[in-house]
Length: 442
Ligand code: ACO
Image (cartoon, rainbow, N blue to C red):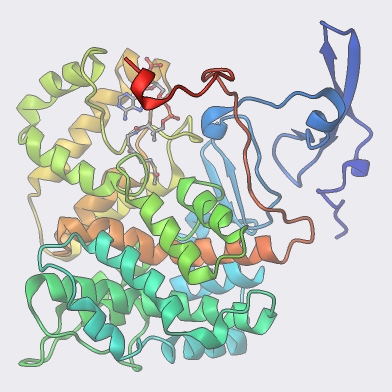
């Protein structure tokens, strides 16, 4: 199959004309087609030709890059990685395969998959000195704070893979990041509960290994529950990438300066932490606990709808999805499966969530604003059932998203049209004025 090169404006003869009515000048801007989705207007020459910038805080109408990794149609509720639907990947694939797909562009064959798994498995240990690094944190540090610091600190340990211009080193760093994130995440948890760090085991798969490092203790054998391992693997798949979201854009922006990938991913982790983004999964659980009972839902919804109150229905709404987030659909189904498999017959938080969703989806406020459950709405309930502490929820998101961050970073570095990311602004501050010496200021 031949594809038009999407970044080449010459690939289409369509143009959009901008008229500056103050001068009567017309400017034509080429339309660039993607392989699917709306065409974009190439405004790169706008300032040079017209002397004006575009103004788009929050980037609601701005494409920042060309990418072949992930496609979202938010109106319909479609998410695809490299052309494969997320529902198919969640059902039939596993996280290692999805990692390979995101990093390399194609699904692996059996040999490639075995080699990739072997490589990741053999990178899971962290430098022993990182253990000492942990001791500087307070016991009650939020694990996301620990992750920001320790992932950034990896750049102080792996000097042999920091040359961003060397494709081999880029791949080694990608493997190291994917492999070491669960180890660091489990260490952050162990440190917070005062238990010894548990080393990874090479006979376990990615999700099993993570659960082993989280829950095993030297005093007794821990047997990984396959249902939990599969559920964890699926959660990792569903969070692996989501095109140019806030944290990925942060990674790309940091990486566009030539900063090393460990530092760039640490920036992404910081961005993910906020409750408007990855921190929402933790916030959803707190919200459900605060609501406390199905009987309180209506008064909570009233509070959310009150424009004088800044309470939001966490796990609802999305910048891109104006329909049901396909990941939330998979997780909603998964949630029931996991609870059944664990023999949990009655989970009050799930009952509140199901009823909350029903009421919200039927309410004019949410319908008008096209607010639907997002990926965070059900993930917390599954993680809670799996005994994962709430403060670790966003950490798990970071573990899963690392492959997306690093795949996007690699794609950016390998793109010949890559430039330093540097937005412009509309300045509305004071115009030039004379400096007033201190003794003359009132
Ligand atoms: N609860 C109540 N009202 C909401 C919600 C919500 N969760 N989300 C949006 N709205 C309302 C806003 O108040 C606004 O109403 P208005 O037009 O009357 O002012 C309207 O819907 C549009 O909202 P914006 O904030 O302008 O939309 P934006 O695209 O910037 O926000 C966001 C997207 C941040 C995700 C928002 O929906 C939100 O805060 N949701 C809750 C947090 C959450 O679940 N985040 C996770 C997102 S998924 C992820 O990152 C993994």
